[in-house]
Image 1 (cartoon, one colour):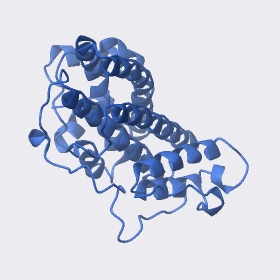
Image 2 (cartoon, rainbow, N blue to C red; image 1 turned 180 degrees about the vertical axis):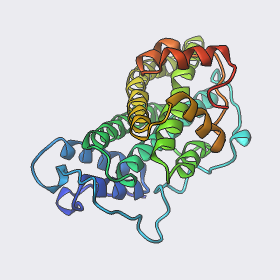
Image 3 (cartoon, rainbow, N blue to C red; image 1 turned 45 degrees about the vertical axis):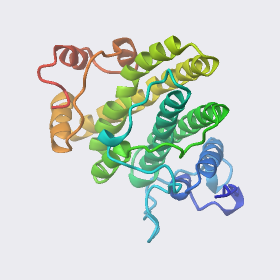
Amino acid sequence: MAPETPNPSAWPGSARAWALQALCLQAPESKVASTHALYVASQSSLGAQGQIDPAEPLQAPVGDALPGRPLRPALIPPMQVPHRSPFTPEGLAALLHAICHIELNAINLALDAVWRFPDMPEDFYRDWLRVADEEASHFTLLHELLQTLGYHYGDFPAHDGLWEMCVKTQNDITARMALVPRTLEARGLDATPLIQSRLKKVNTPAALRAVAVLDVILRDEIGHVAVGNRWYGWLCARQGLEPVAHYRALARLHNAPRLKPPYNLDARRAAGFTAKELDELQAGAPNPAR
């Protein structure tokens, strides 16, 4: 599928409306380009493209599945995704593909937060537009590296766990902030150093380039999780909710995945998790996600 070229002159009336349009795009290259263009426009005070319009009523286009996806990869249950060793060329490509898939989903998650939830402060939307822009850069870095190995995005099966949680929380912005950035994306803070350690043992040029790319991603993802923590705390304060107790209730309600060690405590602290949360996380009783 040929990428659709972003055309700023044809954009809808607000940055939120354009986020919805970008979310509907199927070709990853088009989604990436549109996301970058949206972020640049949103930083400008000139023209409608830079306007957030928090109160604008938006609806997903009838007949368009969200998010827009390419025909591949095939989406299968998580337990059916094959496990391959990164010490083989195909296994290394499969690992990079899996992370590439996560980053494309992360673009969709950020764009969805921008269009779906009205009447938030403008900083909320600007935060998630920046997140979407950075996730788009991550996808490009990984996809370019994957192509040096002779593969493209879509060549391996993948699962849809990230977007499934997005759907579960589509009617509750507090649950979305709690369970997507603060749970699923925060697990990436824990997993990335472990993946990097394995890649260093592979010790091929491609594996070592992947380590460097993951350094960039980990740095940015700390900021993305911090955005989730910031707005989860803000929403809890506005509703008079105790954040830790409410998080446990939301995790049970939406069957969030159980958090497992080892934890990247330094990254989690940098992302804004409180000492109380980290103490409970390490104690494991109760697990904050149960």
